[in-house]
Structure formats: C-alpha cells, structure tokens
Image (cartoon, rainbow, N blue to C red):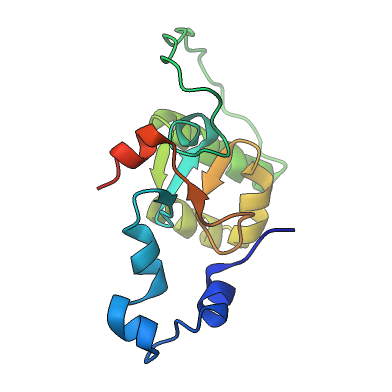
Amino acid sequence: GGRLPISNLIERLQWQAGSPRHSAHGPLKKAVAQVSELFFEPQTVYSLEVARRHLVVLAGPEEEPEPEEVVPEIEAKPLYVADAFAELVATILAWLQAGDGVLNQDVVLPLIKAMGYKPGAVIRAVSEEVFWSHAESECEILLRTSGGAAQHP
C-alpha cells in the first residue's frame, strides 16, 4: 500500500520521453533529484542510522547525535560459509559500517550479481537496517528532514 515505483509515476504523470513535461523539465528521475525536500539517491545505499538523519519518515525528533561507543575489535577466524546469501548480507552490512553508513551501489550490485542473486531479494533481506532508493525497494523517494534538505547539493 502506498508504493508507486518511479516507472509507474512517469506513466501516471505522462512524463515519458517526448512528452511536454519531459521536454520542459527533462527526465522525472533527474527532476526529482533536484528537489531538496525529496530524497532520491538511487546510486547510494544507506544504513538506517545515516538515513534517519536525512529522512522524515525514519527520523525521530531532531537532536544532537550521541557520541559513539568504542567497541574493541575481535580477531576474526576463517569460517566455512554454509549460507552464501547470509554471508552476502553480512558483507554488505559490514561494508556499510566501514563506510560510515554510506555505500555506493556500484560496489554492491556487482557482488550481488556475481553471486547470482537478485537485487530485490538482497534489498528485502537488509531492509530493516538499510535504506536504498531502488526500483525494487519498498520506497524510492521519501521526504528529507530539514537537516537533510540543507545538505542537498
């Protein structure tokens, strides 16, 4: 309920190539990306922690961030991987953590494809911890917080 992929929005708004709207404003994806109050960044995967700083639907009341707790690293021992999909999800989440909650999709998609999985399956598996403006995710476009709108390029 409430989900409308960009492709359907283009059709409903009659924003196809050659239409008056397309001619006046360019592709809808480009026009949406220029609106500072809307969050549409399909090239980037965000941890929910980082997305909460930018998205109204995920954000609580705006407050000062708390200092992060330092957790000592534990030496990892090589393990046998019995569940490749779970390992893929764990790898993406680890990369997000290492990248301070932001990861370019060009890093993630080749790995997903190389392992033979569909992006939609991975997006659903990480959806409780990740926001990704992708055609197969629950939502592609969300409203930005005032802080997120201020950081819009």
